[in-house]
Length: 302
Image (cartoon, rainbow, N blue to C red; front, side):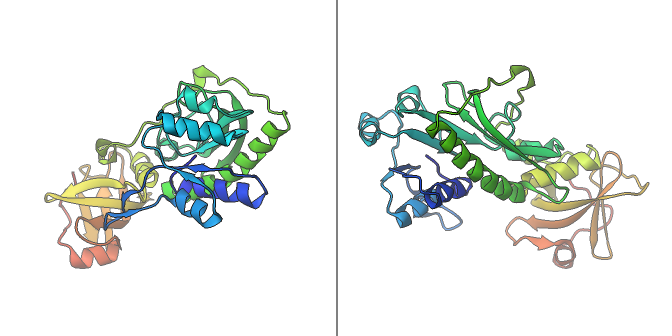
């Protein structure tokens, strides 16, 4: 069970290693991308190419869907970036149902663990497979794998690394359940932290914060949904920044636009904006942006 690109390596790994995938459950086709053309989910495309039966229920509690799922008699349900499963679904398999989550649970429970790990300046993250229960992201841990968050990582690069790491963890977990060697470990509730869905307000940069905080905010939201600020009523999306290590100070949000570089004052120094996008235009490097957009030293971003 899965929908976005994050789930693709897991399905491909199961297929490549001889696992019998009796069906794929994914979200219904819907308008996607800039053109809003109705298209299948990334997981559906892989399943279709592999000739795997595909189920796309509007509701996971539909009696017709539950009947189809029961008739398949699955040994295991593997969930990767899908919906919250009701007990009627996750209790069907002969062995068990498990989920892959892109954090080291109980850290970063919720919809956006990759984003919040970078925003909060973490230097390590990973993936967790765990048994499903009705309270989201709280089931017994089956397996965990960790990796460092590199200085150059953003949400996009870390997403891709964790998708591959997760695929390996999914295969290992299936083997553990098959061999009856899985030993679920309870999560330590005292260490639980949230990772809620990113809101529009979460994307807006507060230039009064420290340079490091703003830099991590940009990394954690790049390339999607992207950190935002405004200049003369226009929204700017920031994709890449660099911290400037000198003693200069200014009014938070005030701009220096000189020599093809765009610098902005923060709460404790300066930050350089390396890649950005103004509404209605393409994403571009700072020198190109400064050649085509009117912004001058002394202007303020808010």
